[in-house]
Image (cartoon, rainbow, N blue to C red; front, side, top):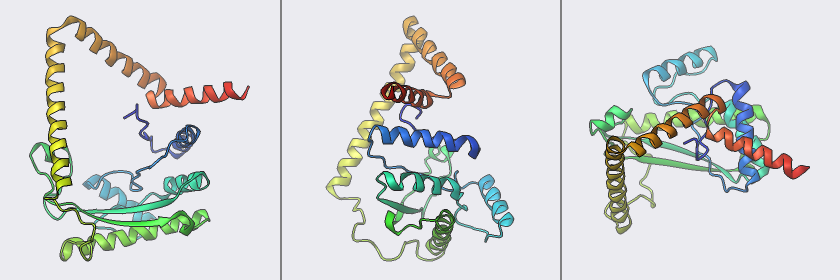
Length: 246
């Protein structure tokens, strides 16, 4: 994930702001058509996160949510304001509902507790419709999350649908879906084979063992000293920019 420039945050705004700014400048410099997926809640919906969200709500005189977490709006507003003049076209609000077999973690997956259905509610907000003032943008995000809480409440306490069935609802028996499932099976088989083959090679080949050890040590050192391959890419980008400006 470091290699493909995931955002790894320390949840200390004084440090994260500079890191996020460098990352966004990097994508702007290379003219990358960025589609950024963020979770303003900052974490998953578990007991510990719910307690923190409730504590945050009580401190800020906000309602207690039952079906989602309160968003932390500072990072969201920073991203919108940074990218507004750099080609940002719209913000998409995605709400996800699981009517059966909710999966909370890796153990659920290992136990075969996969969701039987996944429902999505999508809203598109053109960038021109978003508030220009920071405080108004923060309030806008908070308002959207209040609507999300109400939408999820209706989903789980009523008919487990986000309103009327969409015309774009996916037909699980369509040729496209059957083709996608076949491709996914091939991908899963490939990775199972790759993991087994790699494990076998590590246990049977001295050369592979030394290579594996070298890569592990290299990644450990660069993560410890350099902060990760993502930060090394940012440093390289800054070096090229300085050299170009001379």
